Image (cartoon, rainbow over all chains, first blue to last red; front, side):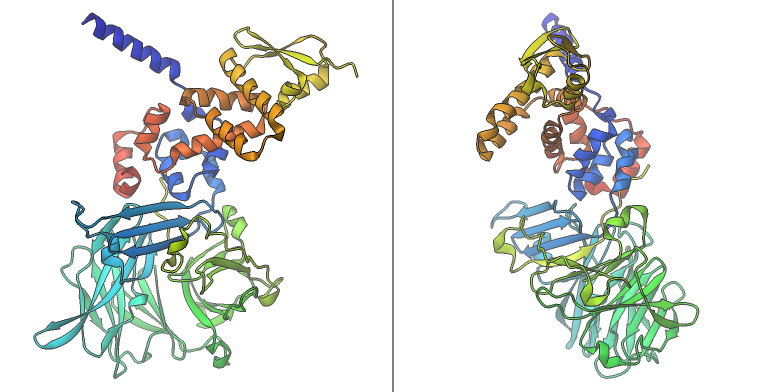
Length: 400
Length: 152
C-alpha cells in the first residue's frame, strides 16, 4: 500500500511539474501553429477546449470549398484534401490486402465506377449506372452513395430503377443538406430518350425507395443541361429552352425564363458552361477552352429575379467562384479578400486548379493567371493518371 | 568600438549566463536592451525565462551562430533533434523565444507543435498537451452528433 501511495504522489507531482497552460497560449503564438494545420486538423483543433473554439484566429481563415483529389480502387482508397489558397494537404488512405479480415468492401470498391455529382457538409454524392433484368425487362438501376471521405462513412441509397429509354442525368443528382439530418432530400433528374419527358426523383433518408415526380410532359424541356439545388427548390436549365424551377415540398413547376443569356447562341456553343447557385442567386458561367499559358475567356450571367432576364455580371463584387463538378460560389466577406473576384477552374488535362480574376478592370485575356500547378507535389506520381478532382463543401466547423 | 565581447544574462531563478555578445544578439529583445543602454559588463535580467529554458535557448542561438556555414541538411537535422522535447519544454521554449523575440526559433517550435496535431482527435490532443476538457457533456455530445468524424 505504502509504495502505491508514493507512486501516486510522484505521478501527481510529475503531472504538476510538466503541466503547462497550453489553452492560454497567446494568440500571437497560437496563430502560426494554426496556420500550419491542414483544413481538417484545424476543424478538430477547435474542439479541444473552449479557448481554442472561440479564438479570434479562426476569423482570419476564409471558408472556401476544398479540392478533393481521390482515387478509388477495390483495394485502395486515397483521398487528399486541399484548400484553394494553401498547399497543405490532408491525406486519408485506406488499403486492404486480399484476405484482410476486415473484408474487402471499402469505399473504393463501391465507388470505383461511380461519378461524383454533388457535395455538402463534407459529404460527396456519387452515382453509378448499372443494368438489371427484372421480369424480362431491362432496367437501368442507378445506385447512389453519399460518402464522407474523412470519416470514411458511406450511406448507400436504394437503387433508382428506370425503364429502358429513360436515363438519369446522373452527374446532376444533388442533395439538400447534411445526409445525417432528417430533412435531407436527394434529387435526381431523369430524361427520356424518345420524347419530351422529364422527371424529378427524390429520396429522403428513411424512405424505402425513390419517389418519382412525373412532370411529363414538362412543356419546356427536351433535355436538361444543368440542375442546381437552392433553398428547397431545384433549378433546371436548358441552353435553348430556358430556366425552370421545381419546388420539392409542393412539387410545383414554374417557368422562370425562356431567354438565353445572349442572342448569339453560337457565341457560347464552344464554351464549357456551369450553372452555379449561391447566396440566393443563380449564375451561368461560360468558360472558354483553356490552352496552356492562356487565360480562358469567361462570361458570367446572373439571373434577375425581378425581370426574369440574365444579366451579365461586370464583376463578382469581391465574391469568388469554384467551377467544376460540382461548382460553388461565395459572396464577399471580410475573410474572403484573398480570393476576391477569382474564378477557379480545374485544368482539364492535369486536374489542377487555376484561377482567373473576373471583373471590369481585368477581363478575359488580360486576367492574372496562376500557371503554377501547385497542388501536385504531395501527390504520389503514380496516382496522377487515375485520380479525379472535384470541389467539395467542407464539413461544418465547430461553433460556440 | 567600445562594445564588450561578452554579455551576462540572468535567468528568472538567478542563474548567470556569460555568453558571446553575438550569440545574445540573435534575441531582438536583448539587442534592443544592448542598443539602448549599452551596459558594460552589466547583467541583463531575463525575468520571464528560467535557467533550464534559457540554457536551451542559448544552445539554439550558439548553434545557429557557429554553424551558419554548415549545409542545410545538417542544420535541419539538428533543429529536429532540438525540438524533440517534452511538450512542457516546448511550451517553455516557445514562451521564451517569444519573450526574447527569436523568430526562427518560434517558427521551428510552431512547426513541431503543428506536427503533433496532425491527424489527431481532440481527445488525443488534450492528452498530448495535458489540456483539460472544459466542454460540458451536452456541448461535447452536440459536437459528436454534428461532426462525429472529427472524434474518430
